Image (cartoon, rainbow, N blue to C red; front, side, top):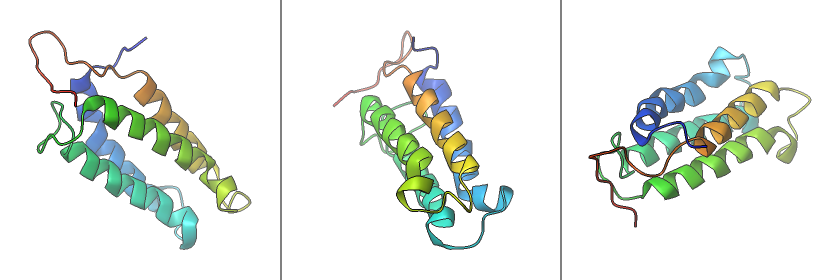
Length: 123
């Protein structure tokens, strides 16, 4: 069931990217290393990808919405699994797991087609 429109997804992408970048400071894991830098890098990638997506929130319209959603799913799963993949789960894991699963869920619930009267090119 796709209950999130492409427009709403575009509205959510930018604050979500900023939240990922700020998460080490918000949730207290500014110790350096993979635990800190993975959400920062993924947040920057999300912001860049959002600017380059062909949807209401995009500017350059390089990537299709379908590609954007698939990348959101993959990066969400990567973020959720990163504490165990990189061995920092005994230091911190909850922010990565929760934010990653939320990102995955939001992507799963997002339509890849625009609403009525909207045109978005899917490559």
